Image: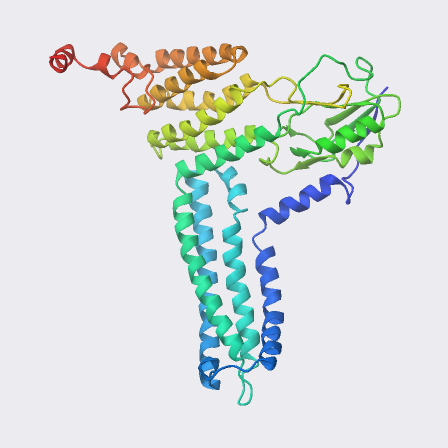
Length: 446
């Protein structure tokens, strides 16, 4: 009978390090805090340098000028920092309402946003530290000049920040960024060696150890290298019955070990991470989930923007082509140098990913003509480009789209028009000639 283990994640394990990295990546305060702490020592450093350097007369300031300049810099940095924070809150509200709350996990990680906050706060503490050194016999001339340069750099960063995020909150820009992230994750998940029929050790036996989840949540990531090394060291087979991204309840089996001498449960628990929500690091399906969220939100009656859905379908199409052109066999298998199966991780099939990408858009967009026409064009392109074993699922999706049109669009001519493939939704050349009146076609032919 299999034993079970349900312990906390070891603090020094791979899982604990992954969680710390996630917190740092999503943190908006770590870099600003570091810059704030560095401001005062840098101010002292400029004072030390100034004591060793003779400055020309044009680089010196009076006590009143230095005090006024530094005071103005402190006030400006406080104001700009408050504006950036307020602007960030506005972006969060807009993105949550018009895009997808899931996208915010990517937005939090933007390096420019952290850099600009760090520059503002660092300049603030730098100027404050210099301000306390200003006196009748002590004027930090180099420090005042450096503060001015820092303000100029802050203004440039601020303008770049405004330009970047004004453009990056557009749904189509967000869609392509998410699709690119999903493609990067998928390519990283490709097996390093082709799948073979060599079985793993102890296949068919009952698991000798079952590791259960200590709490409910989503499987965020697994340490593939650590799992493979552990399985080889203990001559066992490790099986993860859930895919990365799956939501599991507490006490559910997360990992099974097959072999007479399974690894310690504590070590196994440190090789996978369960968190409150999904991450995109090892979950390309999460990228599709975000894209679909944006698309169906645009189709809601409150928004009624099918053109945005058509644009998002372009990003979905590109990601699906990448996946559909790939050999998905063996994607969840890890083997040793001899080809022996050592780790099996549940992965999503092509059918699952295709259904995730298109089902909800089809159901919510069946009455939006440009959405159905664009979806037909997407399916035609998939049919032409994906691997032969993936085409049956594409045909099933095309049949489901036709059935949805049959149910939702009663007029035969409107249904025929909505069922044509059009890469632009409405406006492409495909099917347009057949939709024009015969008299117009004859006139154009003449």
